Length: 475
Image (cartoon, helix red, strand yellow):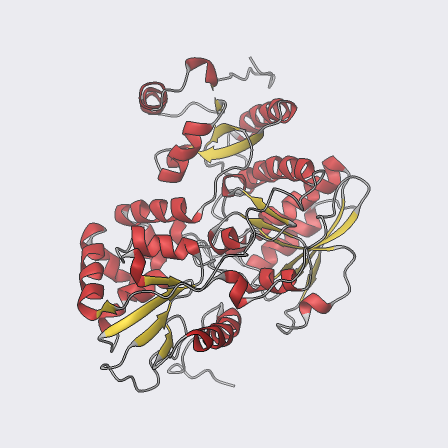
């Protein structure tokens, strides 16, 4: 059967979009009169006739940056703007210039109601658990890191954790990190699983119906999602699992930051990394993340670790915004980040991310979407390691030494790429690290050293520059 080139290309997140459309429509319709309701991430947005003289309710989902750039084509005069995560609202205000009073937040707990508290997260010493990822098995969800982390928990920490991946594979890279060579993600993950030695090998299962996957029989299930996708503004699978009474382990990122139920462990994005890193660097991230999890799984996660409850969260109805206000905000945004941002329409966000203006924009975006570390940490700089490159052994030796030291001191070890030190989210980490370790000598590192010592006020004793001799011994 041939594909119609004129047929609309569905969003990779269309399954979640369809579920969220139904629930948001029901919620908003029950709260106020809705003359015209449009879901901007839906491929048939504005397919129905719109009367520009009536108020239009416009709901942003994860693709709000691209949709905002399309606002010149919206057939509206006055509108109410809605989002489904506080991170999206912050980004619309801080980056895109929409006044906060014009952005309505649809509370997560109103879209999916979670009744009761989940049990403590299983997976501590002597416990059996099944960690379940359900959704797009995509590089943007950091699946390679997840597989490697479960392997380290089994191998080095003796944990009885089985990983199950449920869903369809796709090859979408992190769009905010720019272009990279295409890769067959399914082949990568299946090859990785075969290459590692397991106590219990991960299971990869095909996509199931949206209301079926969480009804499967799992032993002590835990929903796990380490996504750092820039469009991660809700996570339907997380909401479904929590509604079913599951505990969860998720990235402290985007829409996940609004999930505050007891039994929810948030992983700092600084411990996660992203899919554009080399396998060697991801392996180091996995060791640090496994150490963090091994510590956390021994704690009582039902108290004090998941934030405040939802008791007082109510639907916030935004002030009306006029078409000329939207146009002015869009024009200011384009001028701030250079007119080349309009190439997004033709080439996508990935091409914009490769420009200097795109790198500045997305570094600020990630600072808004990213939650900070939950406990004290040390920070180690690594460079981009090519397979078999000269820095692999040296960096790994230094990393593991300081990981042991950090663990003994009750701290995490955060890995940072040297080329990212000046990003807003990186500066936040540098200012709060207990120690800063250099695992390699970088050209231009004197500029960073001056910044640490003079601008951030880091003490010289907190900066460590170890040397590795010919025999691989630390000096």
